[in-house]
Length: 473
Image (cartoon, rainbow, N blue to C red; front, top):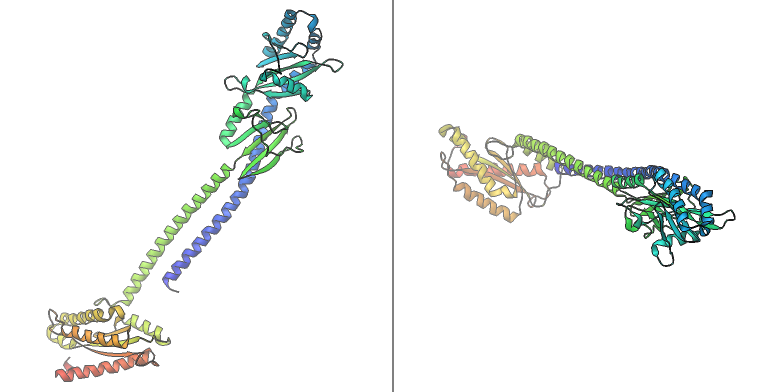
């Protein structure tokens, strides 16, 4: 397995590990986030429930007490037989005691017989539910048949403060309806809690009635105008927390407030979970990129160091060609391998090196070696690999056709014959060739033996034709 494949597999393993860890992390976070969101919503619901019940339980008790107060009952029974101013004064005194004594926003009594609306300031008005929309709360309550209910009217808001009116039915001893009484209380703590919790936990908090109509909401426009039809209110028991998935990552926890007859709904849109997912994804990507960068740099450093060491051990420093070690490794690799049809083995030997060393010095001999190496690279470099396998011996393993080989041999002869150095005037190189096109059944060892024989024959011919003494060269 080569270095590129090792690097590729290393990156694949890292990527698979990253994806696996990310998927496991996200799934675990999803499960944990759902559980946490559900538990958080329950905690918030319980906290809100306690505050609302604390703020409204006393006003409900007070309103029920007023409805059963014998003084109020007698005043309404005798209302038509008593002067209006006298009744108004008695009611004013009574309601002032309730409002100021208990620090309520309002206290009121409405007579069924006269439709007078008594307040701590006296008779406020004569209500007319048939003609005035604001007075229709009265007829709705009377028609409902309930003992009491709660009403939030946006027109009753003062400085954006919530005011809840507790309406309580007044009957005589025979069950005949005498009117409606009650108090109005500012839900300061509940309002502040709603704002803070919605801001801090990114939830929506509402109180709705049995018809899903919104009764309390931070958004005033929704009060008694908006419906939460998707909330399941069926058979919710007191003290039960109903968990419901609403789609698109939204959830709702609902609890029935027995004393109010309303349902407390805490909704989450899943933004916290999505934010957690995004944070984990970004963290995983950042860690992954950091790991990949470190891995890439480490592999590059190791690979470059390995290549440098390998090249140093396989390179002939004077010529820049591969050395004998590289030659032997490649020859061993090819020994038991079927050679390509255009494989050619070339062996080359520099003539006259000994003479140049003896007469001109070793620098002249080095010039000949370098000249032979450069000429071989110019002619055969792009077709194969060139090795320096001895002092003045070179080998080339290349892939060329028979026709290309003839052209390259001619080019090599031309370049060597035209070569001139600074210290040496001429360059002569004897070569031998053998290829699979000519010897298809031979292996690398047999081809190299044939090439050696041809090279020595060429060298013999060179010395015979030049008249030079081979022993001196």
